[in-house]
Length: 116
Image 1 (cartoon, rainbow, N blue to C red):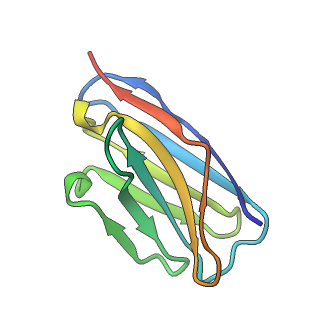
Image 2 (image 1 turned 30 degrees about the horizontal axis):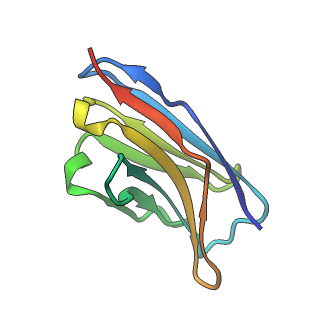
């Protein structure tokens, strides 16, 4: 089992920055992909960014150049540094671990609101 706990969400003005953190308890395998998704009311959850244990990354087009995902394998922690935030980045952000054998694990979500 994997338990994920997110932190770092909040209210920020347009153009501002936030850093999300997600700490995983339980075993994280080298083959697990860690990432961040986001969801707004009435819409499907979408991938924001993901990273493998080797450091390969994948980003949604809408956040490329503004968001940076990183991972500390020793701490089983994944981070999302968000800069140049826009109102359309407002969403609940979910931490995710994708495991080949057993599927997806999710955190409880953290609200990010970008508003003046």
